[in-house]
View 1 (cartoon, rainbow, N blue to C red):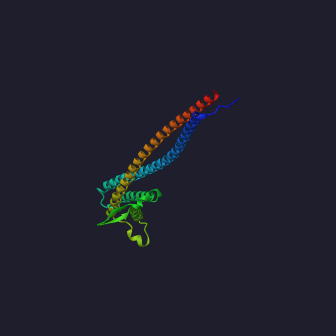
View 2 (tube, rainbow, N blue to C red):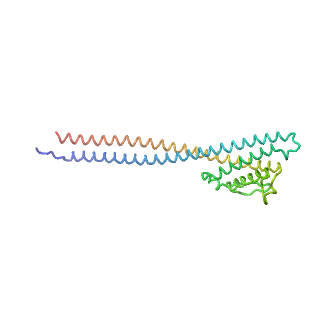
View 3 (cartoon, rainbow, N blue to C red):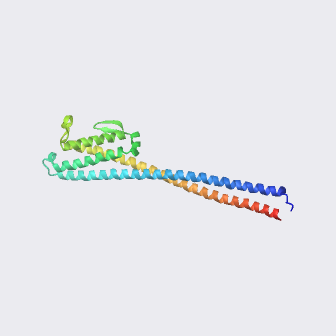
Length: 244
């Protein structure tokens, strides 16, 4: 049986089929690249979410510490109303020690966490008595933690050696330190609130990017399917012509 020659028409059909098959393969490759990009954005999104949750947790700890300290200072203030020997009041000492210890642990927890290393790049103008000077945030809170712990031990009369003179500090000095701490803890609260807002904006942008990637992926898959169908269509026309 003699075979039919393809002729110009048959060759044209093969070329069109090949072109549409190449288009389908190119679109499939584009979909694979979009999936890689999607995974990268998803991973970045997960990191943003973890950072946001961490900032929220820090905000919660700082806020709770400030509220607890304010409440305990209110109780101390109430105890002082009718106390003639307020400087030797063991109940007041205990409350002051609780506040100082909790603030010490808070500063160690926040500054000691490597995820908060960005604080060491921040500089605040800090007022010590009557002098204001720029200070790195992580150094400031390290100093606050150390001073709190020293006063905590001093209130209990546990300091020895050259620090023994700091035992039993006056409550006026303790109150001054606590007011100083609260000012900068409130500023730290604002830092984490700002970081939380920034991460929320980043998450929104990432979610928009994920949506756009999904839209492009669906379009590419649709056009890839159409290209494959057109390629099969030209091949069917070619086979029909050959078999006639």
